[in-house]
Image 1: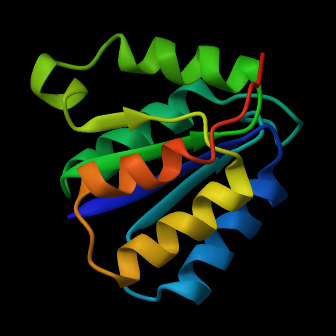
Image 2: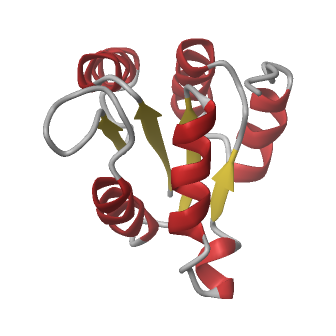
Length: 128
């Protein structure tokens, strides 16, 4: 099974994107982390680590993010993964909302992780 991990600087943004994916594909396994631990804007290392590990127990994970420091944080989390876990964690730079919608369509079509990744690469944006 392929799941989706949505990462954002904003708690409400992450929650809204997760809700949208669930509306579009009720059977999707989707996780989100938004904002810092204290609820302010930012990146929550521990939250990302927890949700990524939870998602990895289901199989492949497509990871979408919004900004550069979110990227740096999830990369630090991924540095702790085993090789087999890294092979299942797919960090993509697709536009966050558009990528999540496209992932929903792919989940509904029961596409495998490799095909979903190909679809989402077409939505890549420069987030530097």
